[in-house]
Length: 253
Image (tube, rainbow, N blue to C red):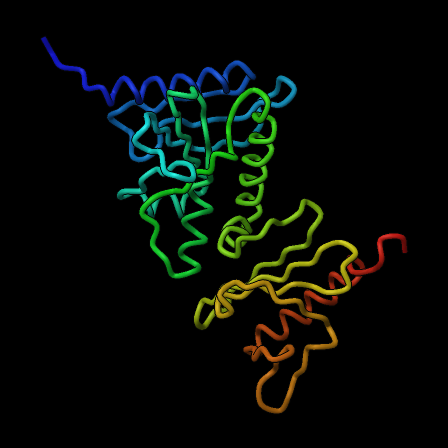
């Protein structure tokens, strides 16, 4: 008689619990068989008003009490770091705790990108008890997941994740990479704000408020405030300011 490990039963319960919740609300769930499981158990395509959307996420599902911590849950990254961080679709982690029979989730891709920006290495994805996944919270979960997919589609999801910021749907976000050293940066303008925000890898992605009158092309190096810029960066910022001027006007103007 062959032996079936308890971990398989616990894992199947967790996958079935999540799959049932999603399918009850009409979403499309494609399970990945064990032979091809390289750090993801499900691909979920979201459905809106009965129509399939173009938005898909990958999900790694964990089950059992072994993932509990004092403040929530943890899902080990193991050897999946590169894939989860650099995936072109968000990778989410979901944990099923059998005793309250509840699901909890976190965005693994976002956590790993943010850690890399801070020069840290994550061993586990942290999952808060505040991020419970059930019938009442599924709508918010879907909205957040679809927004992450949309940011990836626009090519700015990685920037938001590394900086740990939330780009609004009406925000102007212009990414830029210098050709010589490949440094990433972004110009971020919110509607009605009299300033823009600079995100730059050399500034550890700390959001810096900037205004057009702060930009100077000096005899040595261009700069904005105390931040020294490469010439290409300065001209790019000048263009960003010019093309977003209308978005800084008061909203009632």
